[in-house]
Length: 96
Image (tube, rainbow, N blue to C red; front, top):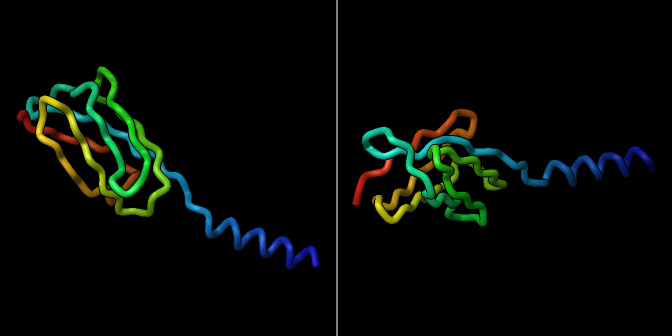
């Protein structure tokens, strides 16, 4: 009976989504950091804002690939597909 209980707990845990941390930096075409850029996962509720150095960290529970949107009033809105969370993202924005 205990074995059946442990097995059912294991199956329940396998169905739980795993969180993944996306990290990176948002820069302009001149490679200067863009502060206060708004990033959010398009099919999710995860969001963040870049710091003064353009750095960001975002934890998501979505399955990969993940669609990410980046917005800032002085730059064109950008949508991109993140396929791998293992590497640091460098996101370049174009001026309006």
